[in-house]
Amino acid sequence: MSSGDTGSLIYLILLGVMVGGWFFMQNRMSTNKLLQQAAVWGLIFVGVVAAYGLWGDISQSVRPQQAVFADEGRIVVPRSPDGHYHLTAEVNGTPVRFIVDTGATMPVLTKADAARAGLDPDSLDYVGRAMTANGAVATAPVRLDSITVGPASDTDIPAVVNGGDMEQSLLGMSYLQHWGRIEIAGGALTLTR
Image (cartoon, rainbow, N blue to C red; front, side, top):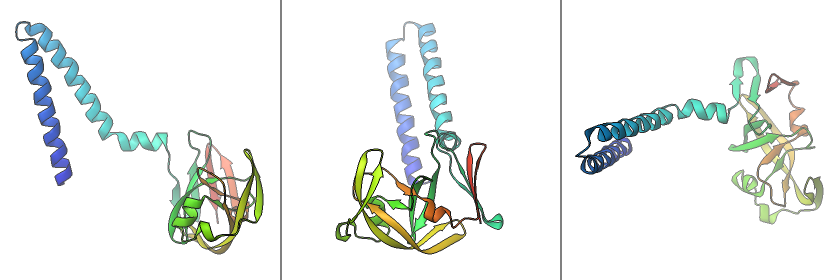
């Protein structure tokens, strides 16, 4: 048990003693009422502990993660509750979370993701234009040293950096064509080399 876990446990015990003491003092004349309230708070406490213990399983169903089958050369990306396929790839050695977008011509990086991948968004020439749902935005053409997904690594990938506000980077068709097969079935996107 780490020192952080020990501190949390001590905090919870003290909190429980304080709440229990308050209930006892408030209800010392009515034992039945005290027992009912203690049972309710006990159930709430057990429920919180159970939810905390199961959070890994709950978060996986709320925000599913991609699965890499290296021996088969296959990546399986489950559809997220928002209806998109979110894939994490390493761009120039830095993890970047993408939305797989077959409507995008090439990979599109946000300014923040470009900076994390070693590009300087402020020094780029935003000479291109892209049409988005929110209108035209300026783009800067770049070449990425590498994009790695699981065991698959591709080098010298053309991409653009979006000059406008964008929540998440997009993984477009020029990169997806590096995969031999792209299949969407059963609520999952499968990329196979």
